[in-house]
Amino acid sequence: MKREQVKEKYKWKIEDIYPTDEDWEKNFKKAEERLAFSHYAGKLSDKATLLKFLRENEEYGKDLERLAVYAHMRNDEDRGVSKYNAYKAKIGALWAKYATELSFYEPEMAKLSDEYLNALVADKDFSDFDYDIKRIIAGKPHVVSEAEERLIGMAGEIFDSFIESFGMIDNLDLPLPEIEWEGKKTKLTHGLYGIILHSDNREKRKEVYEKYYSAYTGLINTLTSIYHGNVKKDVYLSKVYKYSSCLEHALFSEDVDRGVYDNLIKAVDENLPSMHRYIATRKKILGYDKQYFYDIYAPLVDGVNVKYSYEEAYATVIKGLAPLGKEYQALLKKGYDERWLDVEETDGKGGGAYSIGCPGTHPYVLLNYQPALNEMFTIAHEMGHALHTYFSQKNQPFAKSEYKIFVAEVASTVNEVLLLKYMLKEAKDEKLKKYLLNYYLDSIRATLHRQTMFAEFESKAHEMAEKGEPLTKENLCELYAGIGKKYYGEDIEHDYNISCEWARIPHFYRSFYVYKYATGITSAINIVKRILNEGDTAVKDYFKFLSGGCSTDPVSLLKLAGVDLSSTKPFEVAMREFDETLTEFEKLMDVH
Image 1 (cartoon, rainbow, N blue to C red):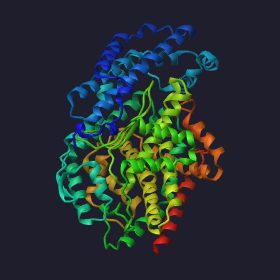
Image 2: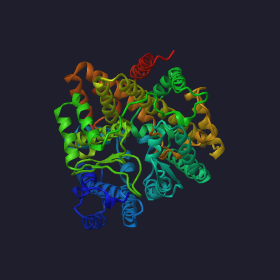
Image 3: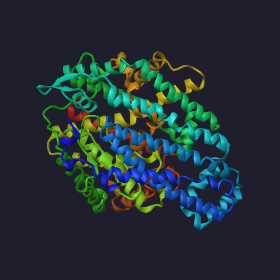
Protein backbone atom coordinates (compact mmCIF):
# COMPACT_ATOMS: atom_id res chain seq x y z
CA MET A 1 0.00 0.00 0.00
CA LYS A 2 1.19 3.51 -0.86
CA ARG A 3 1.21 6.12 1.91
CA GLU A 4 -1.10 8.42 -0.05
CA GLN A 5 -3.76 5.69 0.06
CA VAL A 6 -3.91 5.80 3.88
CA LYS A 7 -6.74 7.77 5.49
CA GLU A 8 -5.64 10.91 7.33
CA LYS A 9 -6.87 9.63 10.71
CA TYR A 10 -4.37 6.75 10.53
CA LYS A 11 -1.37 9.07 9.98
CA TRP A 12 0.50 10.76 12.80
CA LYS A 13 0.08 14.52 12.97
CA ILE A 14 3.70 15.44 12.40
CA GLU A 15 2.80 19.08 11.76
CA ASP A 16 2.46 19.43 15.54
CA ILE A 17 6.29 19.52 15.51
CA TYR A 18 6.75 21.68 12.40
CA PRO A 19 3.79 22.77 10.24
CA THR A 20 5.74 22.20 7.00
CA ASP A 21 9.05 20.91 5.70
CA GLU A 22 9.97 24.51 4.98
CA ASP A 23 9.66 25.29 8.70
CA TRP A 24 12.00 22.41 9.45
CA GLU A 25 14.52 23.73 6.92
CA LYS A 26 14.36 27.28 8.35
CA ASN A 27 14.88 26.00 11.89
CA PHE A 28 17.67 23.71 10.74
CA LYS A 29 19.47 26.66 9.18
CA LYS A 30 19.06 28.68 12.39
CA ALA A 31 20.44 25.78 14.42
CA GLU A 32 23.49 25.57 12.13
CA GLU A 33 24.12 29.29 12.59
CA ARG A 34 23.62 29.17 16.38
CA LEU A 35 26.03 26.31 17.00
CA ALA A 36 28.70 28.01 19.08
CA PHE A 37 29.74 26.73 22.49
CA SER A 38 33.51 26.48 22.35
CA HIS A 39 33.88 30.04 23.70
CA TYR A 40 32.83 28.63 27.08
CA ALA A 41 35.89 26.38 27.17
CA GLY A 42 38.18 27.08 30.11
CA LYS A 43 35.55 29.14 31.95
CA LEU A 44 33.42 26.52 33.71
CA SER A 45 35.07 27.02 37.08
CA ASP A 46 33.00 30.20 37.33
CA LYS A 47 29.53 29.25 38.59
CA ALA A 48 27.67 32.04 36.77
CA THR A 49 29.35 31.19 33.45
CA LEU A 50 28.71 27.49 33.93
CA LEU A 51 25.02 28.06 34.65
CA LYS A 52 24.71 30.29 31.57
CA PHE A 53 26.35 27.58 29.46
CA LEU A 54 24.07 24.86 30.83
CA ARG A 55 20.92 26.90 30.17
CA GLU A 56 22.01 27.87 26.66
CA ASN A 57 22.98 24.29 25.88
CA GLU A 58 19.62 23.12 27.22
CA GLU A 59 17.69 25.38 24.83
CA TYR A 60 19.86 24.36 21.89
CA GLY A 61 19.39 20.70 22.81
CA LYS A 62 15.61 21.11 22.75
CA ASP A 63 15.71 22.61 19.26
CA LEU A 64 18.12 19.98 17.97
CA GLU A 65 15.97 17.16 19.36
CA ARG A 66 12.86 18.52 17.62
CA LEU A 67 14.77 18.73 14.33
CA ALA A 68 16.10 15.18 14.76
CA VAL A 69 12.73 13.65 15.68
CA TYR A 70 10.98 15.30 12.73
CA ALA A 71 13.66 14.08 10.31
CA HIS A 72 13.54 10.57 11.78
CA MET A 73 9.76 10.38 11.55
CA ARG A 74 9.62 11.72 8.01
CA ASN A 75 12.30 9.27 6.96
CA ASP A 76 10.38 6.38 8.54
CA GLU A 77 7.21 7.28 6.63
CA ASP A 78 9.03 6.08 3.51
CA ARG A 79 12.71 5.14 3.58
CA GLY A 80 12.84 5.48 -0.19
CA VAL A 81 12.20 9.26 -0.24
CA SER A 82 15.57 10.88 -0.94
CA LYS A 83 14.52 14.23 0.55
CA TYR A 84 13.99 12.72 3.99
CA ASN A 85 17.07 10.54 3.72
CA ALA A 86 18.90 13.83 3.23
CA TYR A 87 17.12 15.40 6.22
CA LYS A 88 18.25 12.55 8.43
CA ALA A 89 21.80 12.73 7.10
CA LYS A 90 21.91 16.50 7.64
CA ILE A 91 20.72 16.31 11.23
CA GLY A 92 23.14 13.45 11.86
CA ALA A 93 25.99 15.63 10.61
CA LEU A 94 24.82 18.59 12.71
CA TRP A 95 24.55 16.36 15.77
CA ALA A 96 28.12 15.21 15.21
CA LYS A 97 29.27 18.86 14.96
CA TYR A 98 27.34 19.60 18.14
CA ALA A 99 29.10 16.74 19.93
CA THR A 100 32.42 18.06 18.66
CA GLU A 101 31.57 21.59 19.81
CA LEU A 102 30.82 20.26 23.31
CA SER A 103 33.89 18.05 23.46
CA PHE A 104 35.51 20.36 26.02
CA TYR A 105 32.68 20.02 28.54
CA GLU A 106 33.16 16.67 30.28
CA PRO A 107 36.98 16.74 30.29
CA GLU A 108 36.93 20.25 31.80
CA MET A 109 34.25 19.37 34.34
CA ALA A 110 36.19 16.25 35.32
CA LYS A 111 39.26 18.37 36.10
CA LEU A 112 37.29 20.46 38.59
CA SER A 113 37.55 19.45 42.22
CA ASP A 114 35.03 17.14 43.83
CA GLU A 115 34.47 19.88 46.42
CA TYR A 116 33.39 22.36 43.71
CA LEU A 117 31.21 19.81 41.92
CA ASN A 118 29.53 18.62 45.11
CA ALA A 119 28.79 22.26 45.99
CA LEU A 120 27.03 22.58 42.62
CA VAL A 121 24.92 19.50 43.40
CA ALA A 122 23.81 21.17 46.64
CA ASP A 123 23.11 24.55 44.94
CA LYS A 124 19.41 25.04 44.11
CA ASP A 125 20.35 27.08 41.00
CA PHE A 126 21.85 23.88 39.60
CA SER A 127 19.02 21.56 40.70
CA ASP A 128 18.00 20.82 37.11
CA PHE A 129 21.49 19.49 36.45
CA ASP A 130 22.39 17.83 39.78
CA TYR A 131 22.04 14.24 38.53
CA ASP A 132 24.25 14.95 35.50
CA ILE A 133 26.88 16.51 37.74
CA LYS A 134 26.78 13.48 40.06
CA ARG A 135 27.39 11.28 37.01
CA ILE A 136 30.37 13.44 36.02
CA ILE A 137 31.89 12.89 39.47
CA ALA A 138 31.33 9.12 39.18
CA GLY A 139 32.69 9.06 35.64
CA LYS A 140 35.96 10.85 36.32
CA PRO A 141 38.07 7.68 35.82
CA HIS A 142 36.63 7.31 32.30
CA VAL A 143 37.04 10.86 31.02
CA VAL A 144 39.40 11.38 28.09
CA SER A 145 41.21 14.52 27.03
CA GLU A 146 39.42 17.30 25.18
CA ALA A 147 41.32 16.46 21.99
CA GLU A 148 40.34 12.79 22.25
CA GLU A 149 36.71 13.68 22.97
CA ARG A 150 36.68 15.96 19.93
CA LEU A 151 37.97 13.15 17.72
CA ILE A 152 35.34 10.75 19.08
CA GLY A 153 32.63 13.34 18.43
CA MET A 154 33.82 13.84 14.86
CA ALA A 155 33.57 10.08 14.29
CA GLY A 156 29.93 9.90 15.42
CA GLU A 157 28.55 9.46 11.91
CA ILE A 158 31.02 6.64 11.25
CA PHE A 159 29.99 4.85 14.44
CA ASP A 160 26.33 5.14 13.41
CA SER A 161 27.00 3.69 9.96
CA PHE A 162 26.64 0.06 11.11
CA ILE A 163 23.06 0.43 12.33
CA GLU A 164 22.25 2.58 9.30
CA SER A 165 23.62 -0.07 6.92
CA PHE A 166 21.69 -2.84 8.63
CA GLY A 167 18.53 -0.72 8.56
CA MET A 168 18.81 -0.09 4.82
CA ILE A 169 19.22 -3.82 4.18
CA ASP A 170 16.44 -4.84 6.56
CA ASN A 171 13.87 -2.28 5.39
CA LEU A 172 14.68 -1.73 1.71
CA ASP A 173 17.14 -4.17 0.15
CA LEU A 174 16.27 -7.48 1.80
CA PRO A 175 15.25 -9.80 -1.09
CA LEU A 176 11.92 -10.96 0.31
CA PRO A 177 9.85 -12.80 -2.34
CA GLU A 178 6.20 -12.78 -3.31
CA ILE A 179 4.05 -15.46 -1.72
CA GLU A 180 0.45 -16.57 -1.93
CA TRP A 181 -1.60 -15.64 1.12
CA GLU A 182 -5.35 -15.60 1.56
CA GLY A 183 -5.94 -16.26 -2.11
CA LYS A 184 -3.72 -13.60 -3.62
CA LYS A 185 -0.08 -12.91 -4.38
CA THR A 186 1.59 -10.49 -2.02
CA LYS A 187 5.12 -9.55 -1.07
CA LEU A 188 6.41 -11.13 2.13
CA THR A 189 7.05 -8.40 4.72
CA HIS A 190 8.28 -8.42 8.31
CA GLY A 191 4.71 -7.83 9.49
CA LEU A 192 3.18 -10.52 7.30
CA TYR A 193 5.87 -12.99 8.36
CA GLY A 194 4.79 -12.54 11.96
CA ILE A 195 1.12 -13.00 11.06
CA ILE A 196 1.77 -16.26 9.20
CA LEU A 197 3.99 -17.67 11.95
CA HIS A 198 1.02 -17.26 14.30
CA SER A 199 -1.33 -19.05 11.88
CA ASP A 200 -2.42 -22.72 12.02
CA ASN A 201 -1.26 -23.38 8.44
CA ARG A 202 1.89 -25.43 9.04
CA GLU A 203 2.86 -25.74 5.38
CA LYS A 204 2.65 -21.97 4.94
CA ARG A 205 4.57 -21.40 8.17
CA LYS A 206 7.34 -23.66 6.91
CA GLU A 207 7.35 -21.95 3.51
CA VAL A 208 7.64 -18.40 4.84
CA TYR A 209 10.15 -19.44 7.52
CA GLU A 210 12.44 -20.89 4.87
CA LYS A 211 11.97 -18.00 2.44
CA TYR A 212 12.34 -15.35 5.14
CA TYR A 213 15.56 -16.85 6.48
CA SER A 214 16.83 -17.48 2.98
CA ALA A 215 16.85 -13.70 2.47
CA TYR A 216 19.14 -13.33 5.49
CA THR A 217 21.34 -16.38 4.98
CA GLY A 218 21.90 -15.25 1.38
CA LEU A 219 23.44 -12.07 2.81
CA ILE A 220 25.14 -13.72 5.78
CA ASN A 221 28.65 -12.63 4.80
CA THR A 222 27.60 -9.00 4.49
CA LEU A 223 25.56 -9.10 7.70
CA THR A 224 28.47 -10.74 9.56
CA SER A 225 30.79 -7.98 8.37
CA ILE A 226 28.39 -5.24 9.48
CA TYR A 227 27.78 -6.84 12.88
CA HIS A 228 31.49 -7.49 13.45
CA GLY A 229 32.16 -3.85 12.63
CA ASN A 230 29.59 -2.76 15.18
CA VAL A 231 31.13 -4.97 17.88
CA LYS A 232 34.63 -3.72 17.06
CA LYS A 233 33.31 -0.18 17.46
CA ASP A 234 32.02 -1.10 20.93
CA VAL A 235 35.36 -2.64 21.88
CA TYR A 236 37.24 0.42 20.63
CA LEU A 237 35.07 2.86 22.60
CA SER A 238 35.25 0.80 25.81
CA LYS A 239 39.04 0.86 25.60
CA VAL A 240 39.19 4.57 24.78
CA TYR A 241 37.04 5.35 27.82
CA LYS A 242 39.05 2.99 30.05
CA TYR A 243 36.42 0.38 30.88
CA SER A 244 37.34 -3.22 31.55
CA SER A 245 34.75 -4.45 29.04
CA CYS A 246 31.97 -3.40 26.69
CA LEU A 247 29.44 -4.64 29.23
CA GLU A 248 30.93 -2.48 31.99
CA HIS A 249 30.77 0.51 29.61
CA ALA A 250 27.12 -0.17 28.77
CA LEU A 251 26.06 -0.67 32.40
CA PHE A 252 27.87 2.45 33.57
CA SER A 253 26.17 4.56 30.90
CA GLU A 254 22.84 3.38 32.31
CA ASP A 255 23.95 3.82 35.94
CA VAL A 256 23.08 0.17 36.64
CA ASP A 257 25.06 -2.15 38.89
CA ARG A 258 26.47 -5.36 37.41
CA GLY A 259 24.58 -7.31 40.08
CA VAL A 260 21.27 -6.58 38.33
CA TYR A 261 22.57 -8.12 35.09
CA ASP A 262 23.93 -11.13 36.94
CA ASN A 263 20.69 -11.60 38.91
CA LEU A 264 18.76 -11.78 35.63
CA ILE A 265 21.03 -14.28 33.88
CA LYS A 266 21.26 -16.47 37.00
CA ALA A 267 17.49 -16.50 37.63
CA VAL A 268 16.61 -17.39 34.04
CA ASP A 269 19.30 -20.05 33.78
CA GLU A 270 18.19 -21.68 37.04
CA ASN A 271 14.59 -21.78 35.83
CA LEU A 272 15.15 -23.12 32.31
CA PRO A 273 13.43 -26.44 33.21
CA SER A 274 10.12 -24.55 33.13
CA MET A 275 10.99 -23.23 29.67
CA HIS A 276 11.89 -26.74 28.47
CA ARG A 277 8.63 -28.01 29.96
CA TYR A 278 6.69 -25.38 28.02
CA ILE A 279 8.38 -26.34 24.75
CA ALA A 280 7.60 -30.02 25.45
CA THR A 281 3.98 -29.11 26.28
CA ARG A 282 3.64 -27.32 22.96
CA LYS A 283 4.93 -30.38 21.14
CA LYS A 284 2.45 -32.67 22.93
CA ILE A 285 -0.54 -30.41 22.21
CA LEU A 286 0.41 -29.96 18.55
CA GLY A 287 0.92 -33.73 18.23
CA TYR A 288 4.11 -33.42 16.16
CA ASP A 289 6.80 -36.08 16.02
CA LYS A 290 9.25 -33.26 15.44
CA GLN A 291 8.76 -29.62 16.39
CA TYR A 292 10.53 -26.87 14.43
CA PHE A 293 11.06 -23.19 15.10
CA TYR A 294 8.32 -22.29 12.62
CA ASP A 295 5.96 -24.10 15.02
CA ILE A 296 6.94 -22.06 18.06
CA TYR A 297 4.17 -19.47 17.60
CA ALA A 298 1.52 -21.83 16.25
CA PRO A 299 -1.81 -21.49 18.06
CA LEU A 300 -2.46 -24.24 20.58
CA VAL A 301 -6.17 -23.52 20.95
CA ASP A 302 -8.56 -23.89 18.01
CA GLY A 303 -11.75 -21.98 17.29
CA VAL A 304 -10.88 -18.66 18.93
CA ASN A 305 -11.43 -15.51 16.89
CA VAL A 306 -8.87 -13.01 18.11
CA LYS A 307 -8.73 -10.62 15.16
CA TYR A 308 -9.33 -7.00 16.09
CA SER A 309 -9.67 -3.96 13.89
CA TYR A 310 -7.46 -1.06 14.94
CA GLU A 311 -10.48 0.71 16.46
CA GLU A 312 -11.58 -2.37 18.42
CA ALA A 313 -8.06 -3.02 19.62
CA TYR A 314 -7.52 0.55 20.82
CA ALA A 315 -10.86 0.61 22.67
CA THR A 316 -9.96 -2.66 24.41
CA VAL A 317 -6.59 -1.23 25.46
CA ILE A 318 -8.31 1.75 27.10
CA LYS A 319 -10.65 -0.56 29.04
CA GLY A 320 -7.86 -2.92 30.03
CA LEU A 321 -5.75 -0.15 31.52
CA ALA A 322 -8.54 1.10 33.83
CA PRO A 323 -6.55 0.14 36.99
CA LEU A 324 -4.15 3.01 36.12
CA GLY A 325 -6.94 5.56 36.57
CA LYS A 326 -9.09 7.99 34.60
CA GLU A 327 -6.29 10.44 33.78
CA TYR A 328 -4.31 7.67 32.12
CA GLN A 329 -7.35 6.50 30.14
CA ALA A 330 -8.11 10.08 29.05
CA LEU A 331 -4.58 10.46 27.72
CA LEU A 332 -4.92 7.23 25.76
CA LYS A 333 -8.09 8.58 24.14
CA LYS A 334 -6.40 11.92 23.46
CA GLY A 335 -3.60 10.11 21.63
CA TYR A 336 -6.15 8.32 19.45
CA ASP A 337 -8.25 11.43 18.75
CA GLU A 338 -5.34 13.77 18.09
CA ARG A 339 -3.36 11.43 15.83
CA TRP A 340 -0.32 10.59 17.90
CA LEU A 341 -0.13 7.26 16.04
CA ASP A 342 0.90 6.26 12.52
CA VAL A 343 -1.00 3.04 11.97
CA GLU A 344 -0.81 1.35 8.55
CA GLU A 345 2.00 -0.69 7.02
CA THR A 346 2.98 1.03 3.75
CA ASP A 347 5.67 0.70 1.08
CA GLY A 348 9.10 1.76 2.36
CA LYS A 349 7.87 2.51 5.86
CA GLY A 350 10.16 1.73 8.79
CA GLY A 351 9.39 -1.70 10.19
CA GLY A 352 8.14 -2.76 13.59
CA ALA A 353 6.81 -0.29 16.12
CA TYR A 354 8.23 2.38 18.39
CA SER A 355 7.42 5.49 20.39
CA ILE A 356 9.31 8.74 20.04
CA GLY A 357 9.02 12.15 21.63
CA CYS A 358 10.57 15.60 21.65
CA PRO A 359 10.24 18.79 23.72
CA GLY A 360 7.27 21.07 23.17
CA THR A 361 4.82 18.52 21.80
CA HIS A 362 3.15 15.21 22.59
CA PRO A 363 4.83 11.82 22.03
CA TYR A 364 4.28 9.81 18.83
CA VAL A 365 3.90 6.12 18.03
CA LEU A 366 4.77 4.26 14.82
CA LEU A 367 2.84 1.06 14.13
CA ASN A 368 2.52 -1.35 11.22
CA TYR A 369 -0.84 -2.61 12.41
CA GLN A 370 -2.22 -6.01 11.43
CA PRO A 371 -5.53 -7.40 12.79
CA ALA A 372 -4.05 -9.85 15.31
CA LEU A 373 -4.01 -10.19 19.09
CA ASN A 374 -0.31 -9.50 19.41
CA GLU A 375 -0.78 -6.25 17.49
CA MET A 376 -3.33 -5.07 20.07
CA PHE A 377 -0.70 -5.68 22.73
CA THR A 378 1.73 -3.68 20.60
CA ILE A 379 -0.62 -0.69 20.87
CA ALA A 380 -0.67 -1.06 24.67
CA HIS A 381 3.12 -1.47 24.69
CA GLU A 382 3.95 1.59 22.58
CA MET A 383 1.42 3.81 24.35
CA GLY A 384 3.11 2.76 27.58
CA HIS A 385 6.33 4.21 26.19
CA ALA A 386 4.47 7.30 24.99
CA LEU A 387 2.83 8.07 28.32
CA HIS A 388 6.04 7.37 30.23
CA THR A 389 7.58 10.08 28.03
CA TYR A 390 4.55 12.32 28.59
CA PHE A 391 4.70 12.13 32.40
CA SER A 392 8.50 12.48 32.54
CA GLN A 393 8.45 15.57 30.31
CA LYS A 394 5.55 17.04 32.26
CA ASN A 395 7.16 16.60 35.69
CA GLN A 396 10.88 17.03 35.04
CA PRO A 397 13.06 19.81 33.61
CA PHE A 398 14.45 19.06 30.17
CA ALA A 399 17.82 17.97 31.60
CA LYS A 400 16.09 15.23 33.62
CA SER A 401 13.17 14.41 31.32
CA GLU A 402 14.71 11.62 29.26
CA TYR A 403 14.54 8.41 31.26
CA LYS A 404 17.30 5.85 30.97
CA ILE A 405 16.90 3.07 28.43
CA PHE A 406 17.15 0.61 31.31
CA VAL A 407 13.64 1.55 32.47
CA ALA A 408 12.29 2.25 28.97
CA GLU A 409 10.56 -1.14 28.73
CA VAL A 410 8.88 -1.07 32.13
CA ALA A 411 5.83 1.14 31.46
CA SER A 412 5.24 -0.50 28.09
CA THR A 413 5.24 -3.97 29.62
CA VAL A 414 3.10 -2.95 32.61
CA ASN A 415 0.46 -2.03 30.03
CA GLU A 416 0.75 -5.39 28.31
CA VAL A 417 0.48 -7.39 31.53
CA LEU A 418 -2.48 -5.31 32.77
CA LEU A 419 -4.26 -5.79 29.43
CA LEU A 420 -3.63 -9.54 29.57
CA LYS A 421 -4.96 -9.81 33.14
CA TYR A 422 -8.06 -7.81 32.12
CA MET A 423 -8.76 -10.08 29.18
CA LEU A 424 -8.30 -13.22 31.30
CA LYS A 425 -10.72 -11.84 33.88
CA GLU A 426 -13.31 -10.96 31.23
CA ALA A 427 -12.98 -14.24 29.30
CA LYS A 428 -16.28 -16.16 29.48
CA ASP A 429 -15.26 -18.86 27.03
CA GLU A 430 -12.84 -21.52 28.26
CA LYS A 431 -11.17 -21.67 24.86
CA LEU A 432 -10.44 -17.94 25.01
CA LYS A 433 -8.98 -18.34 28.49
CA LYS A 434 -6.72 -21.14 27.26
CA TYR A 435 -5.69 -18.95 24.33
CA LEU A 436 -4.86 -16.00 26.59
CA LEU A 437 -2.84 -18.17 28.98
CA ASN A 438 -0.93 -19.47 25.97
CA TYR A 439 -0.41 -15.88 24.81
CA TYR A 440 0.89 -14.86 28.24
CA LEU A 441 3.31 -17.79 28.30
CA ASP A 442 4.56 -16.84 24.86
CA SER A 443 4.92 -13.20 25.94
CA ILE A 444 7.04 -14.12 28.95
CA ARG A 445 9.03 -16.59 26.87
CA ALA A 446 9.69 -13.99 24.17
CA THR A 447 10.39 -11.05 26.46
CA LEU A 448 12.09 -12.66 29.44
CA HIS A 449 13.65 -15.94 28.28
CA ARG A 450 14.41 -15.02 24.67
CA GLN A 451 15.80 -11.56 25.41
CA THR A 452 18.00 -13.00 28.14
CA MET A 453 19.19 -15.56 25.59
CA PHE A 454 19.99 -12.64 23.24
CA ALA A 455 21.83 -10.94 26.10
CA GLU A 456 24.00 -14.01 26.68
CA PHE A 457 24.82 -14.15 22.97
CA GLU A 458 25.89 -10.55 22.62
CA SER A 459 27.88 -10.55 25.86
CA LYS A 460 29.78 -13.65 24.69
CA ALA A 461 30.23 -12.21 21.16
CA HIS A 462 31.72 -9.07 22.68
CA GLU A 463 33.95 -11.14 24.97
CA MET A 464 35.27 -12.98 21.92
CA ALA A 465 36.07 -9.69 20.18
CA GLU A 466 37.70 -8.32 23.36
CA LYS A 467 40.02 -11.33 23.32
CA GLY A 468 40.96 -10.56 19.73
CA GLU A 469 38.98 -13.41 18.20
CA PRO A 470 37.52 -12.57 14.76
CA LEU A 471 33.73 -12.83 14.54
CA THR A 472 33.02 -15.06 11.55
CA LYS A 473 29.71 -16.37 10.31
CA GLU A 474 30.77 -19.83 11.47
CA ASN A 475 31.65 -18.97 15.06
CA LEU A 476 28.72 -16.57 15.48
CA CYS A 477 26.27 -19.19 14.24
CA GLU A 478 27.92 -21.85 16.41
CA LEU A 479 27.73 -19.58 19.46
CA TYR A 480 24.09 -18.71 18.83
CA ALA A 481 23.11 -22.34 18.21
CA GLY A 482 24.74 -23.50 21.44
CA ILE A 483 22.94 -20.90 23.54
CA GLY A 484 19.67 -21.64 21.74
CA LYS A 485 19.90 -25.35 22.56
CA LYS A 486 20.45 -24.53 26.24
CA TYR A 487 17.39 -22.28 26.34
CA TYR A 488 14.95 -24.27 24.21
CA GLY A 489 15.97 -27.81 25.13
CA GLU A 490 15.59 -31.07 23.21
CA ASP A 491 11.93 -30.92 22.18
CA ILE A 492 12.58 -28.68 19.18
CA GLU A 493 14.77 -29.15 16.09
CA HIS A 494 17.72 -26.72 15.92
CA ASP A 495 18.34 -26.09 12.22
CA TYR A 496 20.82 -23.90 10.33
CA ASN A 497 18.28 -21.12 9.81
CA ILE A 498 17.76 -20.56 13.52
CA SER A 499 21.51 -20.58 14.13
CA CYS A 500 21.59 -17.49 11.86
CA GLU A 501 18.80 -15.69 13.74
CA TRP A 502 21.32 -13.29 15.32
CA ALA A 503 21.85 -11.78 11.85
CA ARG A 504 18.32 -10.37 11.71
CA ILE A 505 17.99 -8.81 15.18
CA PRO A 506 18.02 -4.99 14.86
CA HIS A 507 18.58 -4.44 18.59
CA PHE A 508 22.01 -6.07 18.38
CA TYR A 509 23.11 -2.77 16.83
CA ARG A 510 22.24 -1.06 20.12
CA SER A 511 24.51 -3.25 22.14
CA PHE A 512 23.35 -4.51 25.54
CA TYR A 513 19.85 -3.19 24.99
CA VAL A 514 17.98 -6.50 24.88
CA TYR A 515 18.48 -7.53 28.51
CA LYS A 516 16.46 -4.45 29.46
CA TYR A 517 13.38 -6.06 27.93
CA ALA A 518 13.88 -8.92 30.37
CA THR A 519 14.38 -6.68 33.41
CA GLY A 520 11.45 -4.63 32.08
CA ILE A 521 8.98 -7.53 32.10
CA THR A 522 10.35 -8.68 35.46
CA SER A 523 9.63 -5.23 36.89
CA ALA A 524 6.25 -5.07 35.14
CA ILE A 525 5.04 -8.40 36.54
CA ASN A 526 5.94 -7.22 40.04
CA ILE A 527 4.34 -3.77 39.57
CA VAL A 528 1.10 -5.22 38.17
CA LYS A 529 0.82 -7.70 41.03
CA ARG A 530 1.13 -4.80 43.46
CA ILE A 531 -1.37 -2.57 41.58
CA LEU A 532 -4.00 -5.34 41.43
CA ASN A 533 -3.46 -6.28 45.09
CA GLU A 534 -3.04 -2.83 46.67
CA GLY A 535 -4.90 -0.46 44.33
CA ASP A 536 -4.49 3.33 44.68
CA THR A 537 -1.38 3.25 46.89
CA ALA A 538 0.50 1.14 44.34
CA VAL A 539 -0.78 3.28 41.43
CA LYS A 540 0.44 6.47 43.12
CA ASP A 541 3.86 4.89 43.67
CA TYR A 542 3.92 3.77 40.05
CA PHE A 543 3.15 7.30 38.87
CA LYS A 544 6.13 8.54 40.91
CA PHE A 545 8.24 6.20 38.80
CA LEU A 546 6.59 7.34 35.53
CA SER A 547 7.23 10.97 36.46
CA GLY A 548 10.84 10.43 37.51
CA GLY A 549 12.61 10.86 34.17
CA CYS A 550 16.29 10.51 35.05
CA SER A 551 16.15 12.44 38.31
CA THR A 552 18.11 9.60 39.92
CA ASP A 553 19.50 6.20 38.92
CA PRO A 554 16.95 3.84 37.33
CA VAL A 555 17.19 1.11 39.98
CA SER A 556 16.27 3.69 42.63
CA LEU A 557 13.36 4.92 40.49
CA LEU A 558 12.00 1.38 40.31
CA LYS A 559 12.20 1.13 44.09
CA LEU A 560 9.63 3.97 44.17
CA ALA A 561 7.24 1.54 42.45
CA GLY A 562 8.11 -1.25 44.88
CA VAL A 563 10.63 -3.19 42.76
CA ASP A 564 14.19 -3.75 44.01
CA LEU A 565 16.26 -5.31 41.23
CA SER A 566 19.37 -5.29 43.40
CA SER A 567 17.77 -8.27 45.17
CA THR A 568 16.80 -11.59 43.63
CA LYS A 569 13.17 -11.38 44.79
CA PRO A 570 11.64 -9.67 41.69
CA PHE A 571 13.28 -12.22 39.38
CA GLU A 572 11.97 -15.07 41.51
CA VAL A 573 8.46 -13.57 41.36
CA ALA A 574 8.64 -13.38 37.55
CA MET A 575 9.90 -16.93 37.18
CA ARG A 576 7.16 -18.16 39.52
CA GLU A 577 4.57 -16.30 37.43
CA PHE A 578 5.68 -18.23 34.34
CA ASP A 579 5.68 -21.56 36.14
CA GLU A 580 2.25 -21.01 37.72
CA THR A 581 0.76 -19.83 34.42
CA LEU A 582 2.16 -22.94 32.71
CA THR A 583 0.66 -25.19 35.39
CA GLU A 584 -2.76 -23.54 34.98
CA PHE A 585 -2.51 -23.85 31.19
CA GLU A 586 -1.51 -27.53 31.31
CA LYS A 587 -4.40 -28.25 33.65
CA LEU A 588 -6.95 -26.61 31.33
CA MET A 589 -5.41 -28.34 28.31
CA ASP A 590 -5.33 -31.70 30.16
CA VAL A 591 -1.60 -32.18 29.46
CA HIS A 592 0.25 -34.70 31.62
